[in-house]
Structure formats: structure tokens, C-alpha cells
Length: 112
Image (cartoon, rainbow, N blue to C red; front, side, top):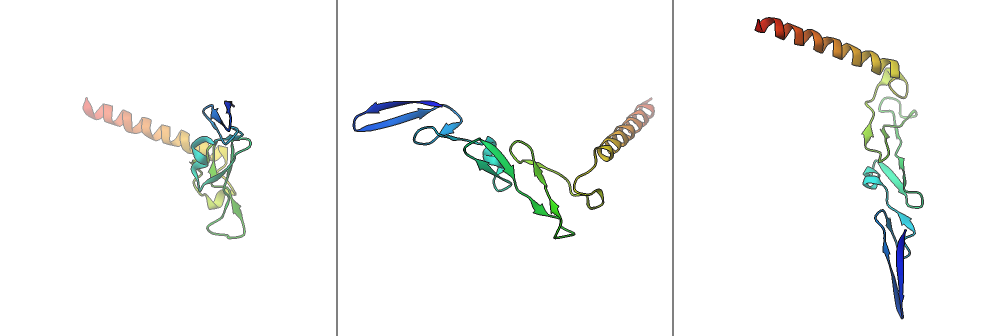
């Protein structure tokens, strides 16, 4: 984690990147966990993302922030449960690709 030199009466440690503290005992978190979206565990260097409540039902938990540094924000989908279902995401992505292909082919035909 670093190297320490003992020079009487003062000793000091030079920490490797990613570590800090008097004895290099703490680990830094990626992007400081995008604070205030998450909090850093300085022992492990892992982030714990903040939880919020559903904007429509204040008793239902909603984990909006995710990712290694809590910087990924899920779009809120009140009808989808707690998260958008993978099948909903896949279907919407395929629909978007289909529409782009139609628009692109229409543009090519109009240029002819």
C-alpha cells in the first residue's frame, strides 16, 4: 500500500495511488462514489449507492443510483415495478433501431 520511512523523531509514509492515511490504511473510492449519490467504504474501497423513495409512492424504496461509482441513474418507470424490465429495455432498443433504419432508408430514397 505504500512505503514508510522512520526518521527519528518523525516518520512518514508515501502511499501508492489509491491509498491514503498516516499508514496508507485507507482506500480511495472511484470518483468519490459520485457523492452525494453514494458513500465510500474506506476499508474496502467500494461504494454504497444511496436509496430514495418512489416519487409517486413515498413508502416504496427506489434504488435510482447504480454502478461502481454510483453515477448511473436509472430512469424512473412507475409502471415497471422497481426497475425497467430487461425485456422492456430490449424491445424499446429494437424498436428504436427499426425506426432509425426506416428513416435512414427514406432519406436515401429521397436523395435519388
